[in-house]
Image (tube, rainbow, N blue to C red; front, side, top):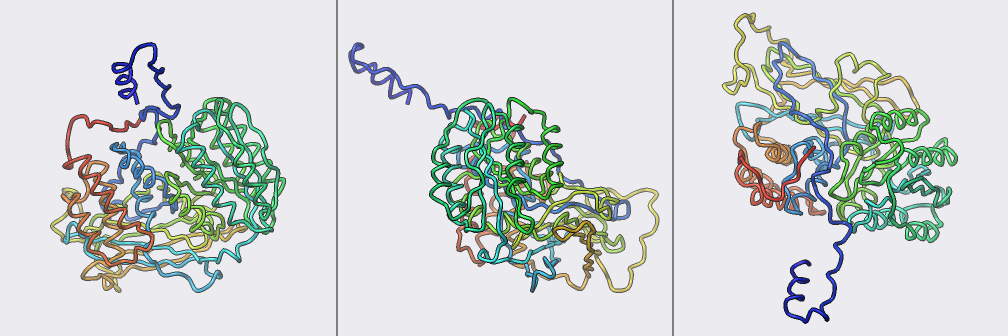
Length: 512
């Protein structure tokens, strides 16, 4: 734009040259985006730490956000890459339960790790019971929309309005919608309105404009007040916060905002966060508010992603079928020398938290899938990562049944305070000769996340191996997600170059 203006000034008389147009307000720097610092999970020696405990996570925002960066020609900061959200972006076809009486089904698969046959990969799959859209309970939704000046960009408020319009068109007469906005102060744009009055809802969305500072705290308070006013005792009650996360006036302390949301979840109202935009995007806050608000976090970078999150996955986004879902797996030191949990670093729990029903954990929505991967090193393998201990005793005897591990899972049904327990042993006899196609896809996605973070965990597996593995799969790809994934890896290979490259990279996003 600037070059065109200068060219015009050089070729036309000064008196006739038009003034250079002002730069658009949405041109902002990438270096104010905020991501929580984290380190990869370490390799654990089974004899020292046989238990691994964590909360499930259904968020997918990290993958969509990183996709946006790569599409913009930027290298994502390492802390923007969360392996579990990359993995859970995709559907692996885990077996589903037969009825809502058992809200989800747990399955496992054990196979050689694609990057090192001397190690093994354990995939844990959880599939929630899928409730047809037409039978979903009535929904009381509050659209909490950031209309501050930082949202004045095509990839923010305009995309946000189009996204919520998609969701609005799915509503029924029994649903209720409120719209709350916040900038310098919070305001009510639409009181609780029946879902079949779509023209009225869409008109209220269309009138929204961006301007002012960002008082997110007041907006959250007003949104919960409206949710309580229209509360449905036997329905879905949820606030959907859409923002770039740039709270700069009012309650701006992250801990205070988290406490505010955590207190409100006790009233039975969940919080989903949808991230938009670039430049000042606060991923850290958006993800954390969803975690403490018993909701999920997604990032909307395109209308296609909006359709995926708010239309195709509407049931899992809105209806919770199991609360506070925790996983604890005990590895057998007689068969497993070492293990490593891939991702979930900010979801780790103390071992005593597993049986403590007062400790919050992630929720599963209708039809949701959750996938977790462990990399295991069998006893006697030449691929050990940790040095032998000088004073270690002899290895324990192998117990009868040849159990690799014992998987425990706790969850609460909606409205209940006591958790229920599911146990599933993982036996050595279940080891497959070759990983299934879904596991190979999950492994490729996990390796991609690691490569973006520096490529230190997967024994030299890099861009070419990831691409070849994903290309070789014959999985159904009706939504084009696998093809898009392959394209992203190819783009990253060109933009980033060989793993381990040192020195500055042009156009790199910088994490604070």
